[in-house]
Image (cartoon, rainbow, N blue to C red; front, side):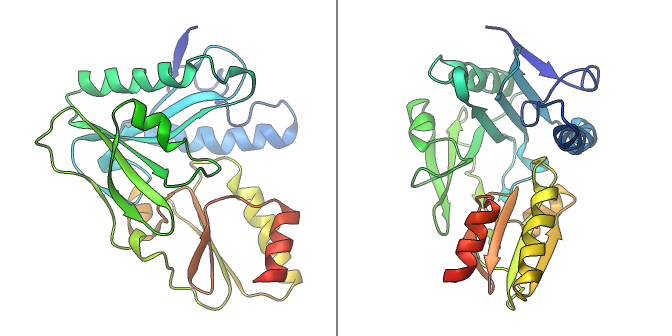
Length: 252
């Protein structure tokens, strides 16, 4: 097992796990993600993956610059830890997390922060995984988000969700509101698809793309990457398929 770092020097040649197909669609997705990464490397972004072709990576950066609605100082914030398919249950997730732990200690961080959930949810690493590594819940945000911390410095002040993230609301109250970032390469095309469905159903829709970490901290949902709101209330951080979204609209 070899873990490698994708950085400025090799990003054009290396895949970034999320979108690894060679078709036109996946090439476009990969470009979105890579363009975002290139801008964030100077802000401390770290992206590590297994030296193989598959979805097994960890992404993290200093909490001050992280694209999550979390406030804190001198912590490392995990954006995403994802291991799927044939790579599961081989200790890869632990190895990737250990990379983050070791680097964070080397850089003098007070600890590591990650967002998980009280119940198992798509796109969020299970809470139990982090508990086994010593992470503890220090804050919560509705309806199911939890902020977990692994402290190296027990005297360090706990990080927290922003007050906005804890409201579970957005200011657009007339219909469906999507808030997203390019931290995930799949968002752009899905925003186009789901907003088109809203138009077909004559449901008011608003799309907000957050373009900086500061905007995420001010307006983002606890998940940071994406959220769907309905009549101002948080619905989900899960990116619905076309069929699932149409089904939701029939029951809202």
